[in-house]
Length: 365
Image (cartoon, rainbow, N blue to C red):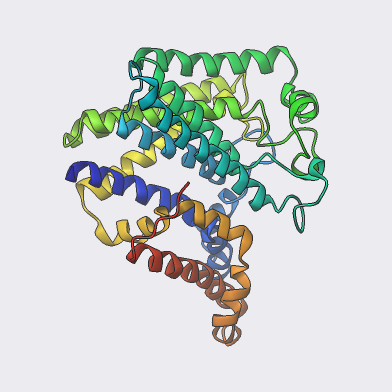
């Protein structure tokens, strides 16, 4: 049991690292560059911007990493419902369905309907969201894991990636207006799309390959569970799998561009390769080297990740930071003052999360 908790601690820390950039970590690079002039901070700032269309930056990894980690927890649990009577399956189905519906509703809340609040006209609500995609990817990955053999799970993952590629390549092109994603969203997605685009980046069709991200997480979690305590085997398997995914994704990119907005299958492979690299690194730091202070800082964030994400939409942390640290910031040069406010945004959120963490309050759907 202790080993399982350690592995979960590394997953919580990695989840916290993922959410760190959401709660304000991305705002640190620009003032640091202004203060030091070091090009590494300029590069970091560039990596904190989403790729406009084809291509990949670190910021494009944050969303799929969260989906991947939801799959890791499924793999660690290694649950199967095959052969069980419906009386035992029904409670699990109900819990999974409630989780899915809650994430969809929270996603609508995060979107504020659109603009300043949920309008009375239901057709003007944006139903698609990051949280909804996380919910659907986890839900269908769970159903696959619970009802199919391990070999079948690998086959299904391959079919998702290849089938999605063939559909995108034959039923449209890789442009915003000409993609099959745009056609499907315009005909089958209720409500409005993000910024009234022809497609929604969290739309109907592009949610399907996100299931593969969760399934890759399942395979990684199962590997951790299978080789529990054998650090060498775990790291070797994770890093080899990461290399295979990255090489395959970059090669595929030549004919099938890496694109987050369309969530192409090549994007799935690139992001899963990066997720595996990070998982291996955090396993090394947390479970092998026991960097406790490092673990604690990120685990505090990771244990209430959904609350963190909602808070970025519902609370003006920038205003709160200026209210607390504005006097200090005003007494410093502009770049240093900007950095103080940015650090304050992170600190205030972390203190709230630490308050919950200390009291064992973990809010998750």
